[in-house]
Length: 410
Image (cartoon, rainbow, N blue to C red; front, side, top):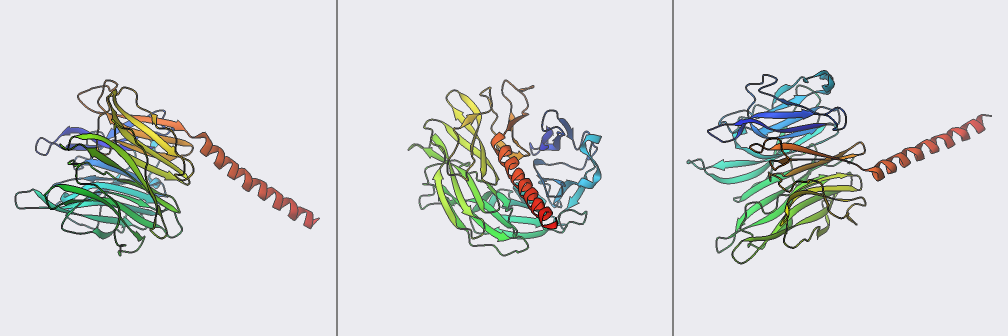
C-alpha cells in the first residue's frame, strides 16, 4: 500500500512544498514507513507539490506531481515491480520524462488512473498573461498503453478547449476488454450580469485513440454559488459503468454558503450514455464537500468531508448494488477538526479492505503547526464472502466436470 503527500518546508517564493513524501505499508496498513525523496533518498532535484500516486496491472508505481518552474520538462517518479520488494527498505525509483515536453510549469490539478498495462493522467493546462495572471485553461490527457518499461511511450491529447476555464479534471480507465478513458471536469462561465457559474462535463475516448467524444453536460449551477470550489468532480469505473460524484453548493441571496450536497451520475462505459443522475445526500445545515469515489464491480465507495455545527468530519457512504441502494453515512474521523485540502480525502478498495486517507491538523494530530496524514481501514466482509462464494462455485464446477470425465473414462 502506498500514499504520496507534500513533505518538507514551503518554498518562500511560491509558498509550495519543495519535497515529495511517500509512505509504504507491507501489512495492509498496520505499520507504515515514510520517506522524503529529497531528504531521505537524495533526490535533491525532485521538487514539487500535490503528488498523485497510481499503479498499473504489473505492480509498477508512478508518482506524478506539479512543478511550476518555467521551461521545466514534465517529469515523474516510477518504481518498477522488478526493482525489488518494499520490505527490503527504500525502493529503487527512476525519474521519467514525458516525451521531453517542456511545459510542466503550466500543469495543474493532476488526476491519474491505472488499469492493466495502461496509465492515464489528466490535468489543467493553464495559460497566463504577461503579468503572470491566469487567463484561460484547457483539459489535457497523457496516457501510456504499456507502462512496464523504462522507455515508456506517452501520448498527449487535448480533451476540452474553449475560451473558458476548464478546471479540476478527474480521470478513469474502464476495466472492459476494450478500455475507455473517461474525464470529468468543470467549466467556469459568466452570465450576462458578470456572475460566474459552473458546468460539469465529461468526455471519453478509447485507449489508443486521440479523438474524443463530444462533451456531455451532467450538471449546471444556478449562478448563485459565488464560490471557487463549486463542483469538484471525482470519477471511477468498473467494466460496464462509470460513476461521477460531485458537490453542489446552495447559497442565500447575499452569496453566503448555506449548505452543500453530493450528487451522482451513472454512465454506460461502452456507449457514454447517462443512465441516472440524482442527489446522493441531503442534510440541511451541513456542508458535504470534496468527494472521492472508488468503484469495484457493483460496489461504490464514496468518502467526503462534512462540516457541521458540531465540527468537521470525514464520512463514508457506500452501495453494494451498483447505486440502487446506499448505506447510512458513517463518520470515520473522530476529533471534529479535519484540515480541508483538495481533495480532502482519498478512497480505495483492495483485497477485502476499504482504505481512506486524509490530512488533518486538528487536536488529534502530532503537531498542529503542520498537517498529519490519517488512515482508516475497514474490512468489507460481504464483498469477501461474495468473492469466496464465486471461487467455491468455480471449484465445485471443476470437481463436477472432473468427476464426469472420470466416469466416462471408466
